[in-house]
Length: 164
Image (tube, rainbow, N blue to C red; front, side):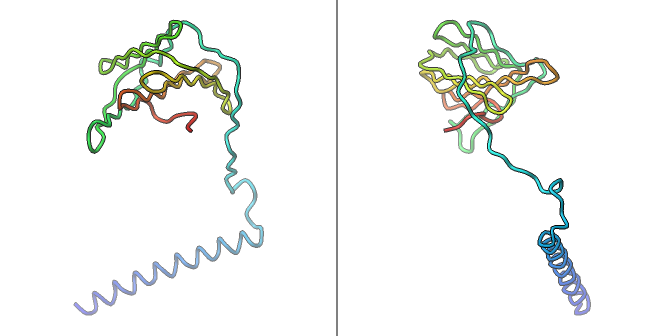
C-alpha cells in the first residue's frame, strides 16, 4: 500500500513539473518574440454607432429551425425551456410577440433607437413591459434576424447585442 501511495505522489509531482516547464517555455517564447501575431488573439471592442431607424410596420421573424432559450425568473433557480421561432409584429407604437407555442405578449413601445454594432443592425425598443432587441446581420448575403427580449420576468434569446 505504501508503494502505491508513493507512486501516486510521484506521478502528481511529475504532472506539476511538466505543467510548470511548459508554462515557462511559453513565457520565454513570448519574451523572445518567437510567437507571431497570428497566434495571439486580437481582442477589439465592438464599434457601436447610432444610425437612423430601419424599423418598419411589419412582422419580424426568425427562421423556423431557430430555437431560442426562454428563462423564467419567477422560479428559483430560473426555469429554462426552448421553443421555436419568434414573431414580432410591429404596428405604429405597438409590438406583439409570439414565441413558438409557449409565450405571447402585447407591448406598447415607449422609445426606440437603432445602432450599428460591428456588422449588425440593432433596433432597441423600450416598452412598457421591458425591452426588445431586433438584431439583423447578413449571412451569405441573406438577412438573418435574431431577438433578445426582456419581458414579464422572462428573458428570450441567447445574448443581447447592446447592454447598459
